[in-house]
Amino acid sequence: MRKLPMVLCLAIIIFVSSNLMSTEPIKLTKNFTFFTEKNMQGYFKPLITSLGESMNSNLFTRALYPDYWSIGLDISIMGMFIPDDQRHFDAELPIAYGNTNIVKNALLADGAIIKDVGGTYKQPTVYGGPSTTIFAAPQNKYASATSYNGKQIPDSTYKSAYFAEGNDISFMAGLPAIQLIAGFPTRTELRLRFLPIPVQNEMMIYWAVALKQQFDHFLNLFDPADQIGLALHFAYHSMNRDPGFSLSTFAVGLHASKSWDFGLTAYGGFQLEGLSGEFKAEREKASVFDFDAMNNPYPEVRAGGPLSFDLESFNSFRLLGGLSYRTGIIELHADAALAAQPILNIGLTFWFGEWGKKEVSTESIERYEKIERYERIKKND
Image (cartoon, rainbow, N blue to C red; front, side):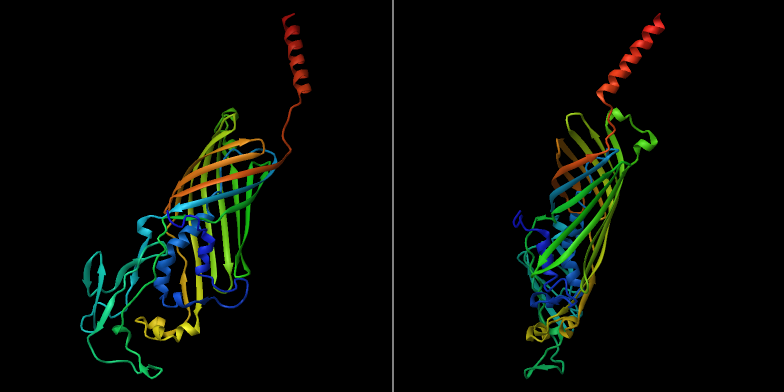
C-alpha cells in the first residue's frame, strides 16, 4: 500500500516532461533515453491501464432518471489495486543474447545464477520492484569502427543490459472526477468533465462526455411504484498534446438500480471499454551522446532516434455494484468494480436545481375526492 496518496496525473509527468501546450516535441530525459520503444510500451502499459480505468469510472449511479430538468455537480475519487501480473513485463533483450558463439550472459535471480538468456526476460513495470541487470561477456574480439573521445565503442552484443526500476506500488490513486450533470425530461442524463493538469507551468486538458438514457418505461417493464430503473450509457474521453501524446477511451454499457423511499439506492451494471493512443518523443541530445548511451547494447538507443509506441490497456470489461444515499440536495455514492485492476470509488453529488416537476396541488386532490364522494352518493340514491 506504499505511495497510496500518489495521484495518477502526477505519474503522467514521467511521459510528458516538457511544455504540454506548445508545439515543441516531447523530450525524454536521460533516465528514459535508454528505453527501446517496445520496452517503454511494456513498462508503462499498467499505468495506461490505470489511466483508462480512472477515466471510465463514476459514469453512473441510479438508473431511475426523473422526467424533469435538473442540474448538479459530482466530485469523486477512486483507486485501483495493482495485480501481481501487472508488476512485471517481458522485456526484449539485445538481439545476440542467447547466441553463445557471440556473447555469454548471466544474471542473479532469487539467489540463483541463470546463464545465457535470450529473447525476453521478466523485468519490473512502473508498478513493480527492483530490476535485474544482465551481465554480458564477449566471445569475439571485434569492435565497431565508431569511436567516442578517442575510445573504441564495443559492438552492442558485448554489453551488459540494465533496466529501469519499478516504484513498488500496490494501490494507485486515479484522476479525480469533477463533472457537471444535466438531467432532461426525456429521462436522459448528460455528464461533462473538464480537468486542466498543471505540468511545468503549462496545462494539459482532459475532457469527457457521458450520455445515459433510461428505457425500461418505454417497454413498461416495471411498476413505477417499485422505483426500479434500467438504462444504457456511453462515454468518450480525450487527452491530447500535439505533438507527442494523444489518448482516447470509451465505455458503453447497461446499468440498473432499485430505490427506496428513505433515500437509499442499490445500483449495478457492466460496461465494455476501449483505449487507443500514441506516444512520441525525442531523446535529449545530451543523453544520446552520453558515453553510456553510445555504449548501450541496443542499436536503437545508440542511434538516438525518436521514440514512439501505441498506448494500450489490459482492461476491456468492468462489472460494478454500489450504493447511494440522497438526503436533500446531497447524494453520497460508493461502489466497487471488477476489472483488470479492481476499483474502489466514492463520490458526492450536489443537486443544485430541479425544474418542471409534475405536481398535483392539494386543492386539486381535495376537489377530486369531493367529486368522487358526490358521484358515489348520487349513484347510491
